Image (cartoon, rainbow over all chains, first blue to last red; front, side):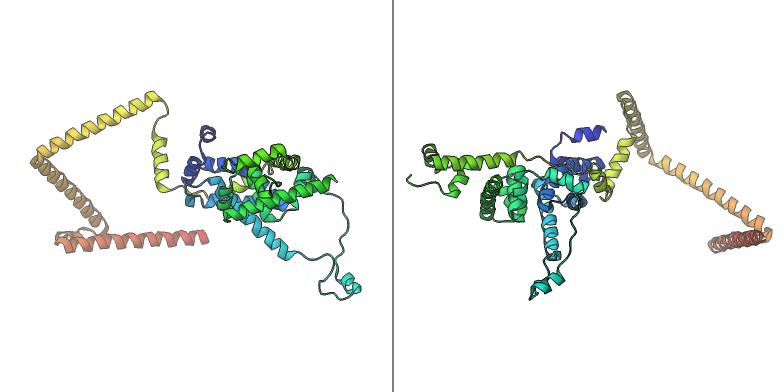
Length: 200
Length: 192
């Protein structure tokens, strides 16, 4: 308990050094420090609580099981966000591949063929989980963020929610600095447009 | 400046850039209601984004992560932990333990120095002790061989190294045979 309390005052690099020594309280402290930022980033990217928990879990497991590879000259949080972003982008790509059109086969020639190959989705009541999600991500700004392209979304969230510099974002996402600036500029522009549309 | 600010210029002001190009932009914004409103709208968006809260995962999140993390304690850390575990917690006990270890170390050093200064006496005593031990071991072995094989086996032991090796081999073989027989008898008894 005393070690856990002491850990709270240590910088990330020192906690990571203790984690490298196999100290369980140090692992727990790293999870405690970053579970919310990492989960928030992923949740706002995938907009599904259950999936976000799974992806955040994968992120922490990858980082903590490879903590011996961590180099203290870099920010631990940047490494965590990098893994979180990679895990999330991979998931979004897989989901995009697995998406089936509800409007029927793209090869359908006639309306009847399209109707025959379309999927029937019954309307259903909002589950408890969906209710929580809509409360958490239901504000106008959250909905506007949800409409951004994933790469714009991660950039704008890292910049303004996590308060990262352009250089840090570029290093975290493995993108050129100019690209990061462009993405953030476009994201702001799209967000303002989306918010104006929602207001109207 | 006879034009409105470009989007990149609005971004510069939004990010609080303090480069030499920003004073004319700021001056323009002060006098241009359109650009001023544009900048204010961008700032409002940034404020909204910066006030977005962090969302908590479920309360069991940390436990679920920890259940899948491989904790590996390197040997030097484990060794240090063991040593630390042996160190008393209270200051008084730590001082007492340190004093005891220091006394033992000093005593051992004095004995070592004395032994090196009288190396002949030490060698003589060591030889004597070794001889005694060898005699005792030989006596025990002779006794065991006599008990197992009778006095007829005594000449074996008097036959030098070869005889001694044969006797040891015989003792081992007899021991193994006896153990096997006991085991077989036990198995049969259990079978019944």
